[in-house]
Image 1 (cartoon, rainbow, N blue to C red):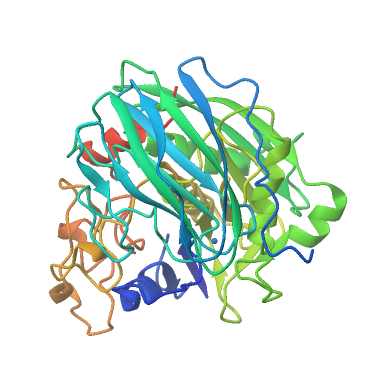
Image 2 (cartoon, rainbow, N blue to C red):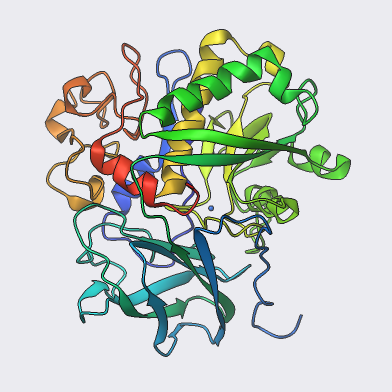
Length: 423
């Protein structure tokens, strides 16, 4: 069985709609029937991250320092001066079990993000306080529905479950034109016998995957620019060619997915980082995950964190064993999971909207599929049941069998264009 999901941490607290996230963020699908879609000193060491040397001059990276916090505490107020139309905050706690960005206040005094993790914040649903994440990232704006005035933004960060040293970074986006842009890609291959950095861009099968990804992102007026390719070291390839998405040791150390993302520390350039592997195994034996993102959004521009990228599974030992239809599907997996990394949520989670704002994205022009569309009483609204309610949107929770999940709304395009990965 195959499923496709975005990365989520292990909850330290009861999420207000845990039943939604438990099912909606882990998309389990029947492969034959459905097509789809984290020393003695108790503190953790300083966060490890790298800033690519070739970052566009349109992007300004501000090092806001490192905050050391004991367990279950929130920092003093921090500030960042913003004079741009879009910016990102990144709190990198390295191996820490649970990091939040709290109490974000804009220059007018308006609260954007509260201190309560179970609030629907004034700016709407976001992932800055997701339970169990060691890196917290916020993109402003993450919808078209609130302004980003110039001035001083105030915020706090929190550490839960254990002490942490949290590295703070602000990414200021100085682009003036958000109608079109270029996206560079960094692609690493790990454990795939017939696909590596030297052969991938000339491989006809891999070209099918890339072309589908490019086609979908062109709808947002985002064109793929430079594609840099990389390989795992031999030892990494043996360990990480087929990976688990969970904490396999149960000790809070970075799992194999996070180890894979940390290999981006060797990428010299900024881009959307993709990691192709043979398989991503879920928590249930026999289930293969097609793709998983490092965050919603992920930490853009900063490489080397445990959330710095998107993993894509071929669900096969070699690309030569993947059918033409599944190659196209992998391209859509790249686009869907990349959409999460850009900051897009599922338009509707698996159990349906039902008037619950935590079951839909915060963008107003994306269709919502009501729970009443669960016509077969399966407990989930399928893509086919929701064809007229957003089932063909790229960010619907699962792929319909009778249509293509590849559409993007104007609001989603607005968000993607403002991510600092787009130049």
